[in-house]
Length: 259
Image 1 (cartoon, one colour):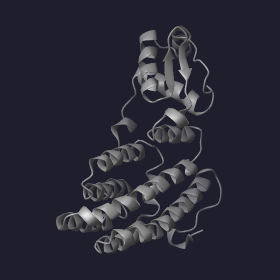
Image 2 (cartoon, one colour):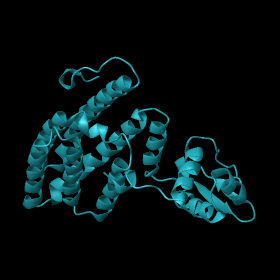
Image 3 (cartoon, one colour):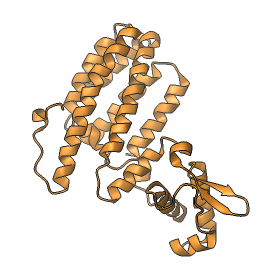
Image 4 (cartoon, helix red, strand yellow):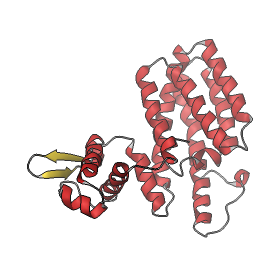
């Protein structure tokens, strides 16, 4: 898991966390001005130096902008923020007692759209040794079906091998962002755990497809394999969240049908 999940945040991180929450949850509306540094410092029980550091973080995330002589104006995060904010939105939802299924659905869809193109490019550019590495990594995953944390770690490594096979630096850097979101989001690891066996079966089909070296065919067929997998994952997470909320027990994994 990411170190940020286990290490204790410092005062500036904690202050940024609370201010970010107010913005992302709508308590501070776009276009409004945040209170002044002195008031924020008193409200959060920290120093003004700490508040300045927290505000600098929010500015870098596209959440606020400094207005000369006025203070800090809240920005519309949908227009100025980055995809990294999904991790924070998920964290605030879970802190509020909710499973962020909609956010996870958005992230799975984003991953699916990117993965389809990544596979097509990897089919054209990937070396035989890179395709063999994917097969080897699939075998590693097959040995970890009962070890959730290890399965997630190695599944992410499978994705990295695939992205590297594109020989496209921009895609590698984009993958780094997606990985940070997943490993930095409490609750998102469950998406890897509830559907491990179906994931392995899907990877087998995708690897066969990749080895055809036919990008056009891959673009048409990849979504056909990935979309049902993501839909089933969300179904199972929904059942799990109902149990956590005190609802009925979920069906066994093999009994959950695609919607």
